[in-house]
Amino acid sequence: MKAVVIHDKGGPEQLVLADMPDPVPGPGEVVIDVAYAGCNWADTQVRQGIYPHPMVYPMVMGFEVSGTVSRLGPGVGGVKVGDRVATFPEKGGGYAEKCVAGAAGLIKLPHDVPLDVGAAFPITALTAYHMLHTIHGRLKPGSTVLVSAIGGGVGLAVTQLAVHAGVRVIGTTGTAGKETRPLAYGASRVVNYATEDFEQAVLDFTGGKGVDLAIDSYGASMLDRIFAVVRPLGHIISIGEAEGQPFKNIRERILPRSQTFTRLHLGHVDQGSPEWAAGVAHCLKGLSEGWLKVPIEGVFPLAQAADMHRRLEGRHVAGKLLLKTA
Image 1 (cartoon, rainbow, N blue to C red):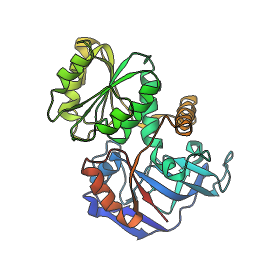
Image 2: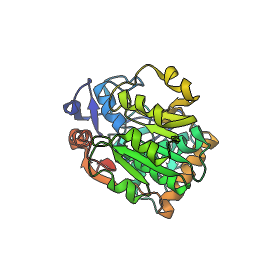
Image 3: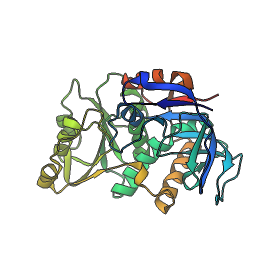
């Protein structure tokens, strides 16, 4: 099979198309004939060697795929060859014509969810769902959430899921033009932190009270500033470090307002749990009913995986990029 391999950490040029042996499923695993692989900011961090969860190189890139089950490993039940599925292979392997994945985490795609959307939604939509409904769990109509990088894939998913739940959304972006889609999806306000004081804007938006929940993917000094705009007993969730490692002062930052803090990794949600099943059902329902949209900004062939990473790192993508295998 053809696969995109990274032999060492570095720039996009490290992504090399190569011939690899077809994968063999172990107990509880299946092989998927991959149709599409999703691209996420975490992919660029893995490529650079700065992802907070260790990876072993060389490796086949890709943590999000859709396709058709082509082979079952020992002990697999509840799925059959030919099923259309999406999944989140936590150890990678998605930038390839074939991919091994655990059967427990397979998402069977309804006929009204096409395969490109199937590869575009799992990480962004399920991350958004579990931040809003599993980790925080206290959001109610009229609550307010702050979403950093609101024009990115996770930000757009959070916006739609929150608005569907009756929650007010204010977001930040550093790129002019990336406010258009979140506003169209129901965000009340988007602040360009390159030209505005986002702290003052958030406090003005909330009448000085601060937001109930803040979701940050920037890290570094941006995360440090967010604590000041979250209300007493409010919650902060970190999901990335696009601007660099967070300052090591979390305890000092949450003490003044008795706030709580979570650093989420989607892979820590048990794929066999009721919470995981509820998230999958909710997101698939949203896709089928049309209130959850996953905008696809570009589709690249496997041989152009490096170009896909370059485009994502250009910070002008308001949606999802995909690799198409065939």
